[in-house]
Image (cartoon, rainbow, N blue to C red; front, side, top):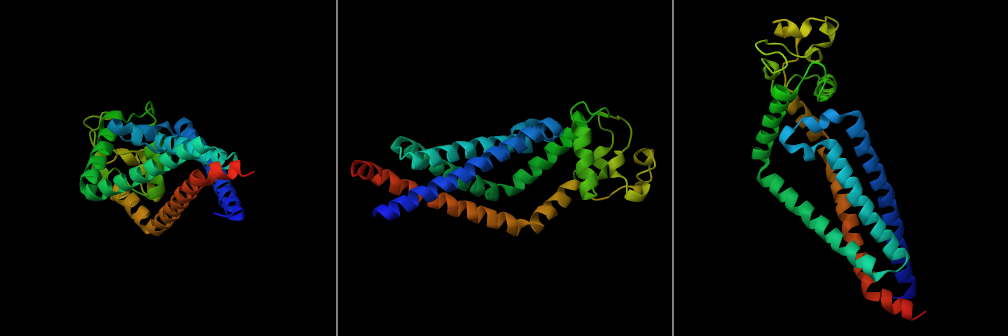
Length: 245
């Protein structure tokens, strides 16, 4: 590889990973903010708290920060050791993404059923009126945004630990025109409540934006491939280039 081509690859890889370094810091910050401001997200899935939005953001932020740091510093300072570590981590991330995607597709029905049951357990056992676990605010925000009630339907709220023997629903389940009525959720008039569950509403919301997720995944895969090829080229030529100076 010529001198100009080597310099172009090295600088492109450096600036690209600098950008990811900054992105990683931002995602990590979002994760910390979600954890502090919306701690209830971690309680939505009691058995799988590690899969909450804040935990995933913090984990992804740390990983992207680390990869960006290694790629940026390795290419800028032409350090073969950092470039090798960068290459190995990117390969492992690529394999992890492929494995997760394959397993997620193969077991999508089981995953869907497990998520629904876990959400119901969170409502039944962890939800409190005084928001001790942070679930009240979290579910209120979800139900108000998506105009829904419960996981599958409004009956998910009936006879939970917060109001045993009562067929009540939270105030956020009420239709907009009845929401000002403080006893709306405690009545038996189901026409005042949203009938559809939140799981399907959120599922449809994600499906409508699936093309955006596809574009992001394709762009990220292309960047990973570029990083792997560039890192391999630099690893193979960096020693020779440094000796020829």
